[in-house]
Length: 87
Image (cartoon, rainbow, N blue to C red):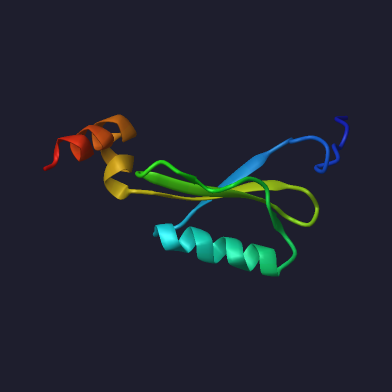
C-alpha cells in the first residue's frame, strides 16, 4: 500500500558495505564505476574511518567503508585519544 519512490529523486534506503582495508574501499569503488555506477560525494577520511558514497545506475545510494578494528572495538573517541598521546 506504500508508494514506490524514484531513487533518482528520493532516498528511501542507504546501504553500507564494509571492507577489511582502506585500500579495499577504493578498489571496490573502481569496480562500481566500471560497472556503470558513479561516485555520489567526495571521499571522507577521519583517520580511524574512511568511506565513499556511490549510486548504482538505478539511483540507489550506497556507502563503502573501512573502520580501524581498534576504533571499532574501543570507540572512535578513545581511539583518537590514543593517537594524540603517542610520541
